[in-house]
Image 1 (cartoon, rainbow, N blue to C red):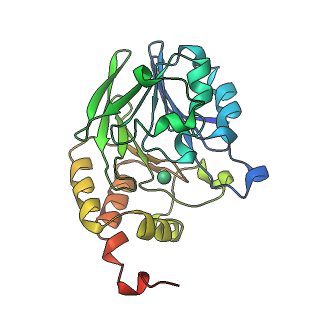
Image 2: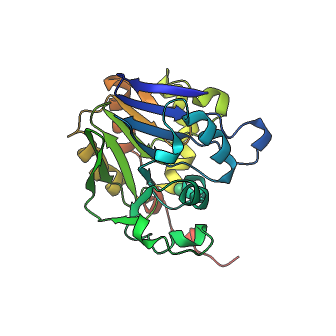
Image 3: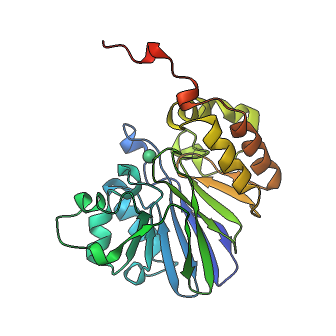
Length: 256
Ligand code: FE
């Protein structure tokens, strides 16, 4: 069932937490998002083929899928955008993804030339007009993908943070916001230490996020951080976490 993260009647943010369910226990739990503003719509990280039908049906009540304006992709992983071909065929949407990945995306399609509809986001990010609002594509490179963006919605004050803030938990728990930050840390720790590239990059990101008015950080796996206090807790945790290449030594590079 969709969770309304924000709804003022004109501008709506929806999250889907349970489209990867117990029948797909072998697949990582992941979240999909819909942003609607005055008759215009964008999907954020719509996911792969496993979540396509559920998302398509779940979104209709809020927005007719055939009118979709955009797919916003944080990076080109299978759980983010492997369903691309279906959306290209059934809608006229444009896909926004790092310019590093535009020429890789056609491999998720059947080969038809969609280059006019696949838009490369420049490294510095961009504004994305949606109805009366303007979403921001924020640079989040190397967290974890080399060309990586997050999407900030200034109306809802929500940061859709992709893999940043991800927790590996069951879909039943993922739909509720984090209540106890300390208890939540173990579900994030291993993922961030291995997938995030370095503490230096995390700190640059934290500095950028602190310049924005963020009420909610909503990652693409696991539970969200709601309220200024929880957002601040996450930012100070990740800014102090050694990760990625900080932890690598020669021992990690020995031929088996
Ligand atoms: Fe990924």
